[in-house]
Amino acid sequence: MTFTLIPLPYAYNALEPFINEQTMRIHHGNHHQTYVDKLNAALKDNPDLLRKTPEELVKGLKSLPLPVQAPVRNFGGGVANHTFFWDVMKKDVGLKGEIAIAIEKQYGSFDAFKQEFSDMAAKLFGSGWTWLVMNQGKLEIVNTQNQDSPTADGKIPLLVIDVWEHAYYLQYQYKRVEFIKAWWNVVNWEKVNALYAGKK
Ligand code: MN
Image (cartoon, helix red, strand yellow):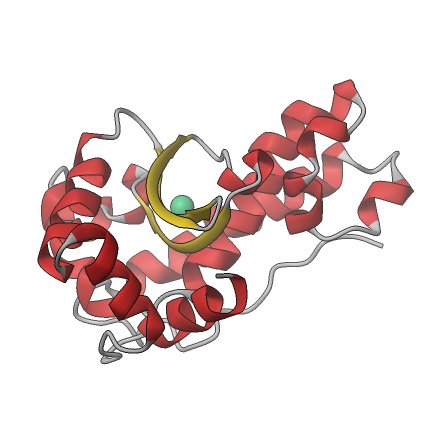
């Protein structure tokens, strides 16, 4: 068994104009694919690990044999994080449901939450991800470097933005803040709400 690239849950141009087709094609077809290929290469002599999902491997990172921890962290994280990222994006989905109430309760207002999340994403140095997670039953905004996943620390992801340069450079060049601003238009709040409702 080997890992395969999961197709995007929508067309490559589905998030236009906020994330353009060329960015999505290269991000999914090349970057995401490369993580799949590298994970397969790294685990080729570990058939028992190939039977797990990338998400399971990353979540259980600390219990894996030491020699495979680095490749699972980098490539398994790359596979799982991107799959999750595609899933929490969709155009024209408004914020509603229990997650809307929970955000307002914890951050005071949606705007305050949006500001804090955007600031975290803007200030992340180098490459990484900004997440909304459930941690001990509470919402939390956290950054991870490179392809690290909060699931390895027992946190439950609800939403994520990829702030590696490859996520926005073709369309926004160095302007990460512009990308973050545009990305709010493609948050799939239905999905985020379903994740929250299932885990609170
Ligand atoms: Mn990426």
